[in-house]
Amino acid sequence: MSDWEVVVGLEVHVELATETKLFSHAPNRFGDEPNTNITPVCLGLPGSLPVLNRRAVELAMTIGIALGCEIQPSVFHRKNYFYPDMPKDYQVSQYDRPICADGALDLPNGTRIGIERAHLEEDAGKTTHIGGSDGRIHGAEEALVDYNRAGVPLLEVVSRPDIRSAEDARAYVEELRAILIATKASEARLEEGSMRVDANVSVRPVGSQELRTRCEIKNLNSLRSLQRAVTYEAERHINLYEAGEEPVQETRHWSEEGRTHTLRSKEEANDYRYFPEPDLVLLDPDAEWIQEIAAAMPELPAQLREKIVAKANVDMETAATVVSRGLAELVLEAISHGADPGRAITHAVQNLAIQGADKLNPKHFAELTDMESSGALTATQSKQILVEMVESELDPASIAQKHGFESMDSSELEELVDIAIAENPDAWEKFCGGEEKVQGVFVGAVMKASKGQADGKAVSTILRKRRD
Ligand code: MN
Image (cartoon, rainbow, N blue to C red; front, side, top):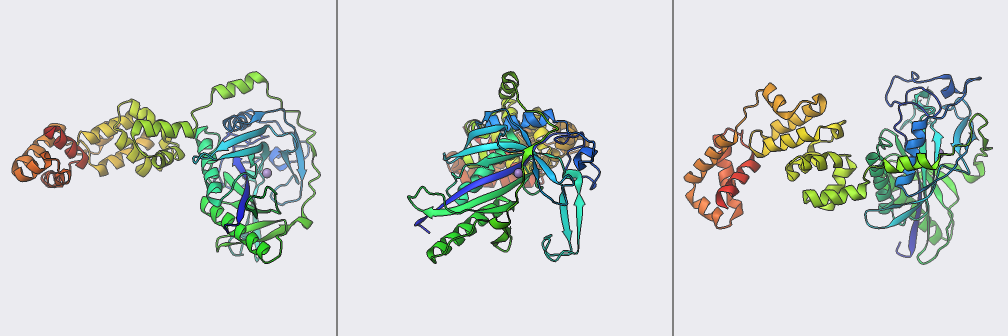
């Protein structure tokens, strides 16, 4: 493998987080009853006309600007093909003039990956095959079609073939997802299909600059699948070359048992007969509009990670987790309201993987960490309050009161600590001499005396206060 270099380019389809679809007022919503979010435009019924969604254009520009792309005049085309989940028999997409061109994405390891283009297009409906294995068409007895997704706005982000390993392919998608979450341009959920990855994979001898025959692996729906599929496909190419054969350019499917297989070869490739969509005009955002979008750009993941590392004194990996969960702003704001950084980070990494957590009131979040630090709440109580804070928007003290959580106030806790110190003079001497690990003796004693109501960290804080 060491004589060969992997060459990967990624095409990522991103569903934009708009209220309505790209060309109709039908809701853009995942998980609704099938075939309820449809208008004549979504189905391409005769006489219906598309109206471009302004918000979709703004989100496309936001992503483009975040990726350092140029925003340029663009044209919608009809891409013609027959597919049962696309009743119009064409997809409206951008062809030779995409809205965003020539950008780059920097991986956290410093590698820069070129972005060739990002274009707007509509999604197709969704077909579910019933009766076969794995939801696949092979062996299926019937197919169900849901048109709710037909016409949902997509931005297809196309990288240059600059990616050199399966790990970097994964890092690229992770970073792109973090950007989408930071800009709120997409929910970017791989498992729900609001972000879908196709990988173009080839290999070449190390040192060579040529681009050899590539294979495209379609619809990788997890980071793990992406990494495994790229690794598998690169090895397949290397084995072919080393056996004196050559890969054939084709589209392949990744199956979770760990291999790719042919979906369609180049010979049967579609001729899409692109032509400009006659019902839509040139999309030409003026400089002022582009400037407005650029000015409203929130902080991007790279900046957020650095801020979190600096303000919360954690490592880059922890900061990356907070950012990828979309909780960076919450944590930073809570810290600015006086939250204990360590406690805020712990919640963001361990306890806040819940929908809507990013909308938590940062001041309430800070109050919660205060209550923990003062010993008013146990870790379990605090977790329960946190979940209810996300659901109810109440402040933590009211929720604690509602549940009648025995608030152990700080004077009570300090008293218990003082008793524990008095009862363990030897351990106290060692602790004062710098033996940190004996504090377990005091924490244990206080826990026992308080019947588990005390917070271990709060006890440590008081112990250190007494010593220093
Ligand atoms: Mn596409």
